[in-house]
Amino acid sequence: MPTGVHIRDARRQLFDAAERVLLRDGPTALTSRAVATEAGVAKGVLHRHFADFDAFLAELVRDRIARIDDQAAALRRSAGTGTVAGNLTGALTDLFDPVATAIVSLVIFRDELRARLRHGRPGHGIPVLAEAAVMLASYLGEECAMGRIAADADVDTLALSLIGAGHLLFAGREGTPPETGAVDKVVTTVIADVLQRRLL
Amino acid sequence: MPTGVHIRDARRQLFDAAERVLLRDGPTALTSRAVATEAGVAKGVLHRHFADFDAFLAELVRDRIARIDDQAAALRRSAGTGTVAGNLTGALTDLFDPVATAIVSLVIFRDELRARLRHGRPGHGIPVLAEAAVMLASYLGEECAMGRIAADADVDTLALSLIGAGHLLFAGREGTPPETGAVDKVVTTVIADVLQRRLL
DNA sequence: TGGTATAGTGGGCATGCGCCCACCATAGTG
DNA sequence: CACTATGGTGGGCGCATGCCCACTATACCA
Image (tube, rainbow over all chains, first blue to last red; front, side):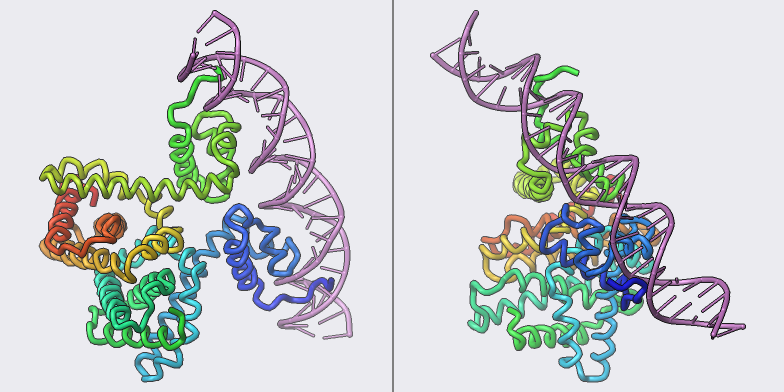
């Protein structure tokens, strides 16, 4: 193997590899060596980029949150320009990944949610999340009643979409009041996109 | 040390010890030996009660969920008899524990939520959760506006209460329709209790 | 182009991990 | 009371882990 050939964004590859290992082999299999092997790099790389394996783990979580924030920002941007459906695809595909959701949910309540709410008024962003969840649920209930979704369909993915979409709408809205119309519009678009892409 | 002296509910003590270790020393410190030492028992005990350390980890999560379910059931029972405030205390103290919430959130979306929704209709329990969250948030907003909660108060605990109360109301309600009046009553009681106990 | 900083490699080492097991104390049966 | 089942103890073993480091190749800059 060649030495010194610079890896393209080593941290990114290590993060992705870690998530793959965690999903495939479980929590105790998530070792520094396993991550390096999965990423196809030497085991020393991890320790050149992170102080600790503990530090790597912490950064892994922060990275996941940051990526979802980016996707939310992209979605909000595209919602303004009118090309919603197109830009939704990538963001949603990634957002509905079960691993991502699981990892995020681990700390989101303890760390990120705390930090966010600390900068706003208490319970400010939560209503937006909850509202979206209510709308999504009732909408999906109708879809189900109308037979457009099978009653025994991938309900787990459905639940994950709920959480994902809720977070999507919640992210980055600390300063502004919940715009019910906009929320409704985005939620509808999300569902339509999900249904079209047969993710349900 | 005496051998053969039976430990009072060894599994329970191991679970509790594991949570303490996880909170205090982080994820990589959560080893079978550390758990045993924290629990004050020999390291062999864990392997007599669980097939694997992996199995222990899985059971740890399942246990946390089960305990919250029990608390929710107790709360629902007491809500019927009218002695709500009294029985709330224990359930809430445990429910608002940040570690508990973090652990639960790790898998609740991936495992438990899936299993639950699989047995009901799609998106059935979710509206209950969301409704409760909305009400709690708006109520707390009012409390804040009225100056009854300091604007810079423990907002993280507040957020955790939101999630906890939401889950509390969601648990075990798959078969029955959301009773708006009951939900409202419980939520109000929860907040009152929390405020009184100065948990915020 | 030579020099320096940066980044990747892989051998190796001490540590501590999960797990096994021989041993022993107690609880529960007739 | 003897007998068995259950459950706790702690020494120890093999091994894989996290981390270090000497070495090497590339990138960047004067």
